[in-house]
Length: 116
Image (cartoon, rainbow, N blue to C red; front, top):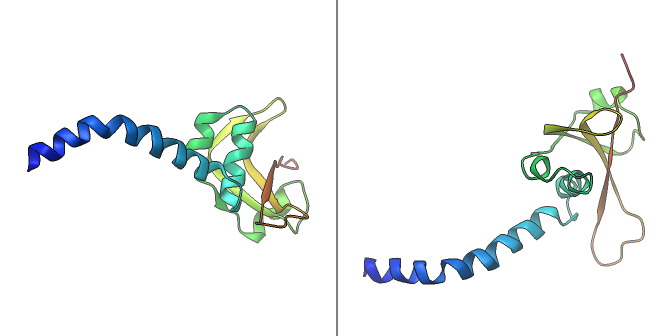
């Protein structure tokens, strides 16, 4: 029985990878939740490794004052900072997209520290 299971896995492993991996990647970057919008923004910035391992987490409201942007938006900090032309980015702002009829879509933008 065990050998038959191993044989089946060896034969069908390619198909599992071809089907499962793209589905996982699409669900990881589809911006229906704020953390996925953060990952998508990082991916669009040209940092695919940082997008995969970002691990976004919401910042507490007490730290909003240190970053540029609207105070009503959500701020997410990432574990893997990445460089842009102007500075290193480790916080992104997220807000809901306007006029979405079928599902909620979130949009993320880079957030730059205000200074010392």
